Image 1: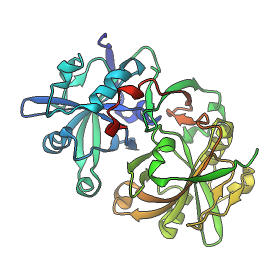
Image 2 (image 1 turned 30 degrees about the vertical axis):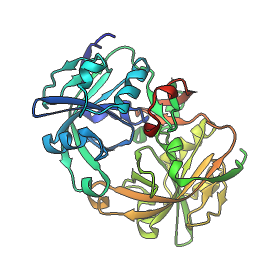
Image 3 (image 1 turned 90 degrees about the vertical axis):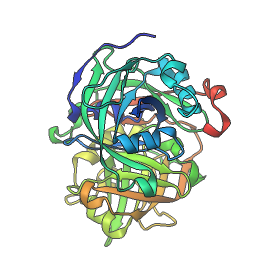
Length: 186
Length: 186
């Protein structure tokens, strides 16, 4: 599986990747170990600063790695990675090195110690900026401090989870409603 | 446009509708007025209690209605409502009655005063359970106390926003990866 070539992407516009609700892979690093988890519960929260909120369950090995390092990378996989996404969700970083086990490439990030996943088409370097709901809900608020995105295809097919083993694969993109928007509402 | 017939749906399973990231319509009621807003920034937070977190910007007329009534309904529209979804996002309840202006049907809810939108295929009655991040981020945490869902089609085509006037329309659903899941990870 190829590493996708990426360019810098404006952090204020990362809604393009996250707002449609794809399953993502969260990579983290702590005390010399790198790990990956599968995550489906996330939301964009603000454009500038570029904020993303998400649930990382405390049963995940990644929970303490992210909480202690206060960093992670949110990577967006396309449908070609679906089987690996399931395998990563099934396994724990307590038992295996997921980069090695799933044949994924840890690419150094620029602003955080957590690695980018080279095979994903977008990678968002994140710093934890608000942890006050971590104890109550396992809810982390991150600022995206640097974003990388493949330039082609413009909209890879993404994987969206419905529970019970069912994925929705992203469908067509359309600008046909664009003329209906008031410009300030885009 | 027809009102969709719905059945009760288990609140612990509403991820089926929200986790893939559709644009939703939030209906609210306060002091005799009902209103609707378009919302794209939301995430499932817990199964039981059934929690959903979302951003309702303070510039929206719905912000004070939801904050004061501490209730809303999250309604999921299918692609046939796309033009109305844009129109609702363009306009303000300060100026118009959106149910009348967009030809939508306010159906009484059972657990909240906010109305269901009859034309949507799923409606989630919500009570505000945590407002401590409202001031900082306009972030509301709701408990889904009652859910209604159309029984057919099983997966209507949903609308997902990418910003800049571009929608992604949900694509195919697949259970082909289901056999790869460990049962407790479904």
